[in-house]
Length: 191
Image (cartoon, rainbow, N blue to C red; front, side, top):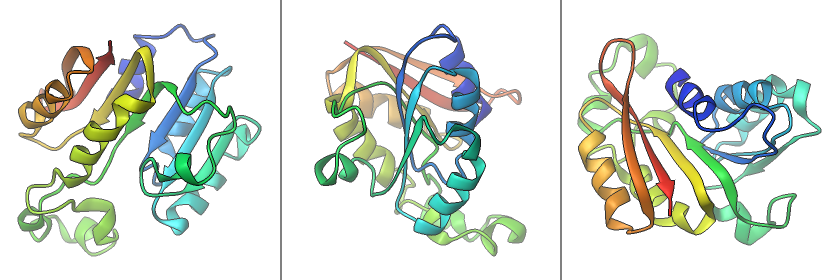
């Protein structure tokens, strides 16, 4: 997840008054890092798991005046309640969604497979089910010049990039590698 944060830091000045959405926030580690690095940002953190959201609330206790939490499936909270800003668009949307395929889930190390909820790891037959939804709906909620930045699994960069291209909403799509040289982040700039 450090790739998402590092990429974001390279695109926006730290004193920016950003509106950030962190989808599938889980423990809130991306949201917490962004809240630390962008002290003027308003952040919305969502997760379908109420248990995960409670952990995120604890981890973001230092920034509760700037972070809203929604127990929501991706963008569902916007239709249900709307973000604090009442403007359902964001400068930065981040996500480290589940991206493991059903077949690969059983090959995960036991310390991961047996201790993390299945829904937090797996996303359909090819691992791309949630990323497809993000690609489909995110363009409606990103400001022009804003970025969508997602973590991906090994070997998924091309497929995710193509999803973003197919929306015809992004002017630039970049793939970032992690320290091991693995394509790990796909980022798209809204036209």
